[in-house]
Amino acid sequence: MFALVDCNNFYASCERVFQPQFNNIPVAILSNNDGCFISRSDEAKKLGLPMAAPAFKYRKFCEDHGIKVFSSNYPLYGDMSTRVMNILGTFTPEIEIYSVDEAFLKFDGFKDYDFDAYGKDIQQKVQRCTGIPISIGIAPTKALAKVANKIAKKLRSRTGGVYVIESEEKRIKALKWTKIESVWGIGRGNLKRLRARHIQTAYDFTQLPDEWVRRQMAIIGLKLKKDLEGIPTLDLDDDTRDKKAIATTRSFEYTYSDIEDIKERISTFASSCAEKLRNQGSSCNYLVVLLRSDRHKKDEPQDSSSLVVTLPYATDSSLTISNYAVKAAIAIFRPGIKYKRAGVIVSGLVPTNERQLDLFLSENPKHHKIMEVMDGINNKYGGYKMKIANQDLERTWKMRQNHLSLRYTTNINEIITVK
Image (tube, rainbow, N blue to C red; front, side, top):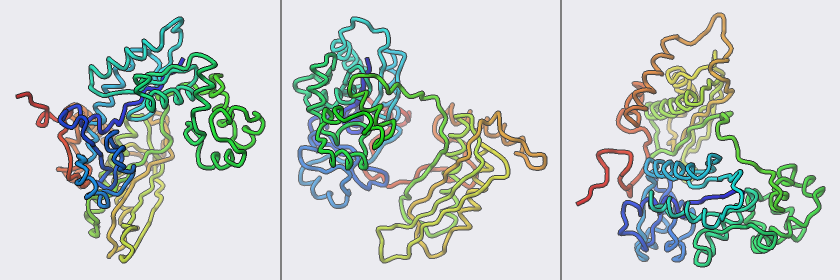
């Protein structure tokens, strides 16, 4: 059996854990730079606050309806996510962390278990230890666990937040209840093809011939169909696999037209990519630098430029990657343009201990030791205590966060106090 555990309105729930005065009050969370709404409590949804609604357009709406608005507090959300996932790992050794607020669990060898009771045990422990409410769907396959989770969440008053599909009768009933556009893995292109075949529900999809599904939706579509039929074909993903490319892209708090500001941001993004490379034991052979102006300001000059750089040797050094990234940024920078977004992508990844050596060009051997010391200090003391000299020493991620709550669990100066 598989379970999909989903934290309810996760960002909003994290805020409420430490500020219970907002329980039963509509809460909404903003994206980077307080741009749009990316999480809403059930109360805010009922008031009609749309997902991804621009904050400036709905400012008066929030004021009129008493919606409490928060900026994204990623250190807090990340720490709370880790706590939830660690608790889930005590119920089964087989877990796939699917996103910051979702995880698949696999119950292999759990014979004759009362999964409804077991699901409620998981739910109660997570709630008791973290204060985060969760919904759980349990079924013989991953795709059916997704369906079961949706039922658990949508019909919470009847399910208590836990729903188990353990019989053929419940599987068919669940699939007939599930609209085809709500099926996990059905994208816009496939939805269009299925609509043309008059497919309305997940059950209708399972009645299609295998040959048609494979021809129109490839092997992954056929695997999804089999999973919905109750035949396990989608297993837990190996979370230890390395990424093939690593990107760090951000919008700026303000527009930048000074090359020195751009160089500092690019250096910070490049250093972040290099740190991620070292964490997975990889080195990169290429990097891409991106610069974008504010496309919403139609009356101002626009620019969208990128440059691919082939490195002379594979590297994971923040110093080397930052140096080449800054040079690329200088090359594509246009005076007079107000830039709003930038990014660095590293690719052509190879295992660091297997990278090809060059007879004439190689990394400065001192870099490895410097990076080792830098990572050790940053890991020990948290945050970015050590940086490259051309980075801003005060702030790493520069974003507009006018409604930011405290980092209750990750910053000793902001820890919750009991009076």
